[in-house]
Length: 237
Ligand SMILES: *Cc1c(COP(=O)(O)O)cnc(C)c1O
Image 1 (tube, rainbow, N blue to C red):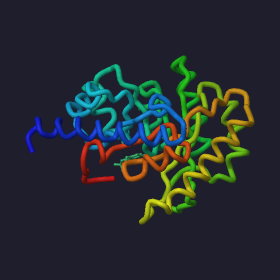
Image 2 (image 1 turned 30 degrees about the horizontal axis):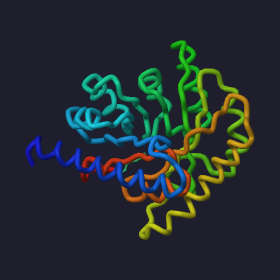
Image 3 (image 1 turned 180 degrees about the horizontal axis):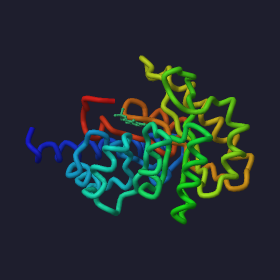
């Protein structure tokens, strides 16, 4: 495929995703602007990411620290950058201060470290807590039963702003099988929002990827992370 046809494909994909987001949002009484579309950009070269940004993408998410750093300077500065992958504590120093949000906070230790690194830089870092909603052994994230205890502790950490929850549900064969996980996440989100804990603003519920973002929006997601449907197939997850 030539460069030109790849960018054309991305533009067409984006138009289709926009339509699906609009439809899903309006089916639950929301507007397009109530939903954030984040482009998951792992493996995608900076020139294609910049094309997506020029076509309207305002948020991007990277998974790997090394890849994030190697592309950072070549990506248009206007875009909001989120870190969405597994963040090891020894790599947190490379990410804090360089992203608008870390969506994948999976431990109290990591939250404390992000807080300390942020304070050292004189900034605050927005974070989401990753919830392992399917209780999968090979996945990181908090168990839903831990949240009642963890959220007030994270709320007290200087340098971090807890802004919501994120999840990657188990891979399901049928689309309908994923809906109970989304519903459970929405309940956690609403319940914790209702508690109005100081220093916690439960604004974002980040769930939904290429295969299920419309269902996620219908279940209350307001931040969808889309890679494959926008950029095409990758050779790694
Ligand atoms: C890759 C990735 C996505 C996007 O997945 P697609 O199925 O390609 O849309 C979303 N969230 C996270 C955390 C990812 O790693």
